[in-house]
Length: 459
Image (cartoon, rainbow, N blue to C red; front, side, top):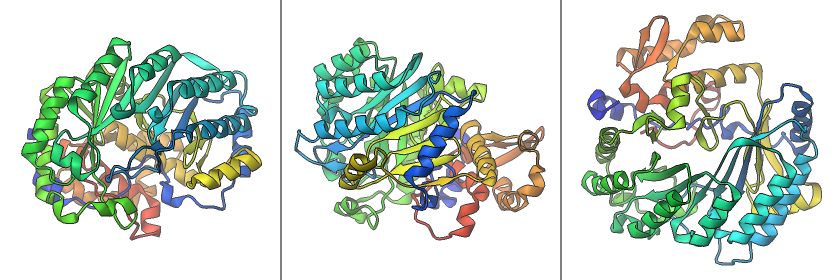
């Protein structure tokens, strides 16, 4: 897919707000009637099954030295370097509460540390956490083990420790190399520093290096971002994510530090996106899906070709079908037919772990309808195609009757060329790929039940 394949005027016309579909149902549908007891029961049920799937482990390490004004993550801003030690002990206690129920034959196929800034922790603290995890769970030999790093907080000793612990994937935020943009979002990250971390990680044998960019930040223009894009191509990462800035100052307090009149206009944002697509496709990357580019030999591309690509709370992944155990403040997990989220306030998280071992604040148990709609949305997001007959056969239902309302909602999008019919399948066009969230939304039953919810823009 190149920028010449896309009708950007059409894309701009469909720009609206909508869910990012890291899950279905999405997080706004979680309720506090779902409790730690419900999660514990599902963990025990799934581990009693002989065909229980592999495990994916996620740890939220929430500390950051300073606030990036664009950030929408659950982060604790602090300069207190003593905070990670007691927090690590809480993570270990939470692991103990889960690991005791895990069947011996289950293996961890994926581990990810997110943040916050995991490298806010010292190398010795990271060793302690990883060794504690290895003692409580059995890892598959080919496990994918990765983390997010901040080059401003990542030393040679960090990379040495991570290499020794078997980490093989690394991702980092860059957002934009332009000095004016960096100053406006309070993230000064020199290119030389970023390059040093990438080059040293490669020298230490990390199999995959990913970088994140954001378009729509203050003072960005197509020309200024083009310079950043060229420098990213020169760094040669394996994967690149180009996220649309979700400007929600009414929901995220520190985003009020960004003035709305400094943001690029909608037409400038489209121009920036167009330039990004053109630059990365010309450099040999493939557009995998929502915001994500990867080299053709990357596992994401191979999984997409094989029809096994999946999407979860960490984005696109090749490890489909795992039960996701999530640890730490605000972390979201997926076990069996439930989603659960830990308490978002770090002090409430601490109290919950100390009193009962789990810190579940809310969640949801999926109905049969939820599971069906999740499959439809997942296939659109990952395959850019949908086979109604295959879905109908898998779920023993008549797709066209069941989803008559959704298909009617898609008719204008089909007429506009966002999708086409091909051998009985619904195939998303290049323009439709940029609007994949729009194409998923007609299948989202909760949007009709609760209109007016706040989401980021789809473009």
